[in-house]
Image (cartoon, rainbow, N blue to C red; front, top):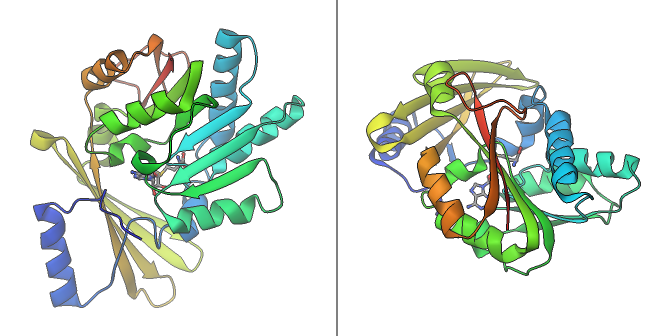
Length: 275
Ligand SMILES: C[S@@+](CC[C@H](N)C(=O)[O-])C[C@H]1O[C@@H](n2cnc3c(N)ncnc32)[C@H](O)[C@@H]1O
């Protein structure tokens, strides 16, 4: 499987050579190793609330519920499962298509929804997913758009997959959040048999977010391998320009999956827009 959306930077190359030649350690493609422990690591993420927020917002603006949903960069499909539960409680039958570039993430998604034919998982970069104008709602969450160096394919794909009047919902982490909580910081998470050490550096001049994940064996502390994730911070003005360029209207911007106005305190920005 190709992962050419993760373009190596000079820093990535340096880290790679340092680790590979000096420490003889193993490098994994993003989400090949992390996928197995992703849900455990994200246990405290409020997917249930996110699902409720997105569906309530859709319902209040569209006076109805989305029946066909497309999730671009769906990961392990946790948000999809929450949306399904919510809609089932309201006796609404949905079909949910998740697209992701990582086979590992999709394996978890498909295992967790086995036997449920509301879900279809599609292994592809979102840019290459064959567009068909059939979806009521397109979502892309947990700052997935940061993996794209150029946002045009994301907006163009969303537009061509939505029916007229369909809704695009996506989020991304604020620059303040990156600087406040992640830049030059290291976190350690104990995840069963493994300890994950997570380091982030924000390169302000180029708006690049360098994330290094090191996986250690809990018992021996042996380093099992590293994933390097290169992400791109996109300025809110750039996002607004794209939305306008691709013909989205009634654009609403909020913070942290609440009706919060955007301020420096907000950790996540989210957009709701209608085609
Ligand atoms: C931070 S995870 C978020 C997953 C999920 N949306 C969630 O809310 O938990 C980012 C996901 O985007 C996927 N991804 C990154 N670039 C992608 C691309 N170009 N096309 C499709 N998926 C991509 C990764 O494989 C990963 O599963």
